[in-house]
Length: 329
Image (cartoon, rainbow, N blue to C red; front, side, top):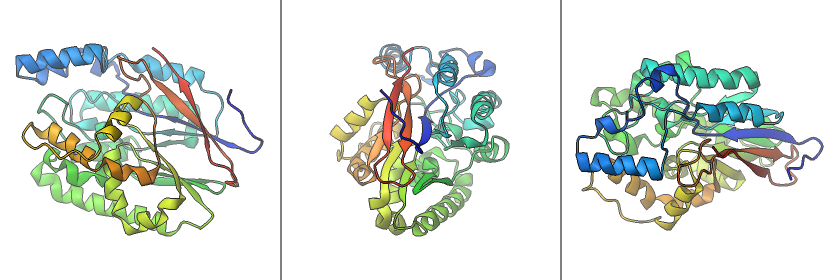
């Protein structure tokens, strides 16, 4: 039973909505499979998606509508990234993907107004599919996301002595994703990253001793890079929890902890190299006190989707209380 103490501030948290509008749905549910040239790998990917990950990847929009109908009145909403299905793999610069993200954000803004806060996920900017080699980060998607969709790479707001901070994991983890960026765009990505890190340093330097932080960071790959920032490292005791998305299910978070420290594997392709490099540093997630917000639809194997609400004591006399609300498909 969820309890509300008088004066509590309530925050709803959801992640990885992967909403598909009409133009993305028109591409067909095999959009990921069409970019895989190897027939054996394509068959494996089909079985993996059908049995484990998500059988109908373009049919998750109803989960957003269910969330909007299910969630009780709250003071704030935080959405932790990945608003479309990124079916062209280049982010929201693709018109169909942009339409999906705009519809998704529009529904959330219609209900929560200026009380809604949104972090960047990797699919806003573009991402290579797990088993294919098409796509990647695009500066055009960055400009569409920030200028037309109104996403902010960095934000913060106070709820009493709590400070909620949202950061852009694709920028922070940029060195791990250089192979996904076009060479001619790399200098501008580096400039954007440094400007973003400067905002983060300033925010952590300005923390008051009595403040507690809830940090929202979509991809845990960014955390080791954040931990190398002296301003962040010095204030880590004040970070009560870091809320992640990206992994979709607590099963993946558990496996990531289990495989923490494995050596990077460089000879099985770009994605394997990226995943194992992230796992090699997964032990550095611990000081951030991570909590995964599962994908709104969960995964096919476990049907474990849902969202959180957090009850914050404005005086910070007790830790935040998190309540998970399952939304089985």
